[in-house]
Image (cartoon, rainbow, N blue to C red; front, side, top):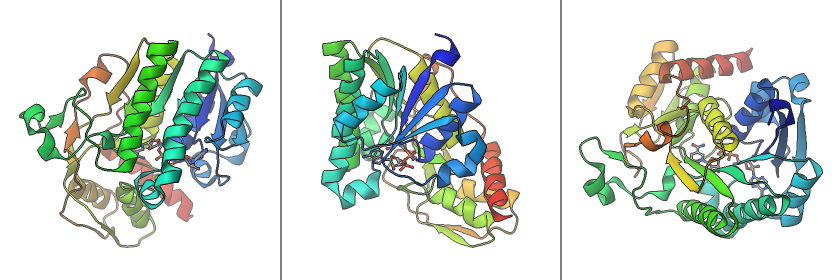
Length: 319
Ligand SMILES: NC(=O)c1ccc[n+]([C@@H]2O[C@H](COP(=O)([O-])OP(=O)(O)OC[C@H]3O[C@@H](n4cnc5c(N)ncnc54)[C@H](O)[C@@H]3O)[C@@H](O)[C@H]2O)c1
């Protein structure tokens, strides 16, 4: 299918990864449909001019409403789906029922609507929150300490449970209906627009540094940092690349401490005042991404480059 005939639906398109996805789709000359409950374009405005946004079709819609989801696919001739809309950890914790409605029922709605309109493949967001604490995986992580792609899920949050359900829903739609899918599991996404969620603090530190304000990151230790721009390109790649099965891939990258990220910010902005709480979050230090690399090109901008671009973006907002 030629690029100009592809119509890509992005659920949660006004979120961080969603806004970056719309940005890349439009840059590549594809038709992009943004489906989001919210109406604020504040994240998109960080990436695209109002004029550039005119190329996007905005559908204010609720993922939990099957009729709206199906009508959007029908009315706009959607050919591909990047399914990102979800409530993140703090929101699921505060409102578990709504979390389940959006993250679980919403995912069923996407797969069911795709089935009914004849879309054969889609990409969806899972998360490393499907896994448990490092102590639960000492037998499988070996010397590298990296979580293998096929390690058993042991979620400790409802959000993680909902993401396991999302991958399970994908598996059943493959077995029963032949709808294939690729779920990607990001870790700590950073970049313009990353303003909510458990691991948004390193980005908030970058924003504070650009504004000349101090910031304290409430966790430290080793994690993997993935630039929102790269993550969005990875989701687009996964959506445009039909493959058999219900596939799930960890996103990887070089494990790095939060403290090292703070140092990079301070190297680029010597006046930055960032402090880091040494206590790590209860996540493994990193995730093994060989399975993804064997399957498709991987987008991985070096950390310093991504941080520099983020600081420059936040600087532009200060002008
Ligand atoms: N950001 C990360 O570090 C990270 C890590 C792992 C997984 N993920 C997953 O990636 C996806 C995108 O993350 P993000 O950081 O862009 O999230 P985000 O919170 O910035 O955006 C989520 C978007 O979903 C929309 N939404 C919520 N409920 C909706 C509903 N009922 N109907 C339609 N839209 C609705 C929101 O309005 C918001 O614009 C999510 O599924 C998230 O769980 C993100």
